[in-house]
Image (cartoon, rainbow, N blue to C red):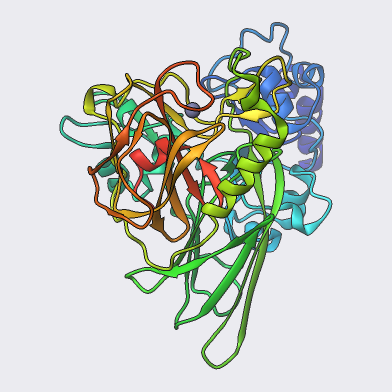
Length: 466
Ligand SMILES: [Zn+2]
């Protein structure tokens, strides 16, 4: 009798179209992604590496333009996995085993979802697909808050325990003044648990931003339980480590603005006082800086002569090669021009350039400020003048050493008012704006060079390094 009842119930379940449909809704075959503001079906398909048509068919979507926020999409191709999919950026100092623990996600699922074929694909800055248990989703954008009157983005960042840099980046802002009181911003919690894949001898590793970006800064911080001797290399550049007041170590390095986006190795080596060796290596993703292409420029052909350019580049590299072990700055860099000109930029750093009908082989190595001939130029931070002279491209130029491999440089001046070897203080007049060298009019071309590589000077006006 009891068996008959069970058979009847089973039959009802199996043959009822209503129940069938419901069962499918409740237990989708495969993990789901919850649509967020700004998502497109094409974008979602691309991020999961599936065809848009397959994604549309699987979810019965007839019109891809009518995707509603909060809709649950089953991602085809991952049968057997269940849960909610979110994205995150792979942090530094992790490997696939530690990522699996960090995200509480079986190793097999991590490999399958991310299509990893070898363990070293978990490079720092990689966009990871993470599977979370239903109801326990923690999307990377954990919160939204409003900037209060009188509160700086810096203070807001500290409130949420994130770096100001991270806060700006997550909100797609370039500078602190892009965020105004009353405006909403997103913040991302950095509470990611212990760094479990750290090699022995290191007690902490930190990088300023992931992924790294062309033309921007790489700042590494290393903490060790005792004094260590450290050296390192990022791609083709040797890293120079210096001790911070809290006992940890930092290295500053520019990421070359024309470096092909892709994956590059970082290695750290060192030894403890007793000779025990330390080593760490991981690959890092470098992202495109999305620099603009300037309209083709026409200039005096002498200034685009390849031999002239190469000779000047070599001389320039040699000037900024020495790494002074003292750090002369300890705050934001100040604008090198008078206040009324300090946010007038005829050309930004990194812009791709073509001269006299060349290809776009060149990039803009500095930040240009507007200005008339004769306007004063100020030292942005303390330092020692290591070069003054006349160059083909840069015209009348000055270079200041700020220590730790950080230099600032001033080009196209009408007058240089310091000499090699001079010590300069923040705000001191060092020269006058002009139009010497390769120019189309008077302006100040301002470079910041870190570890031999030009970086976006704007970062030095808005962030305190290290
Ligand atoms: Zn310039």
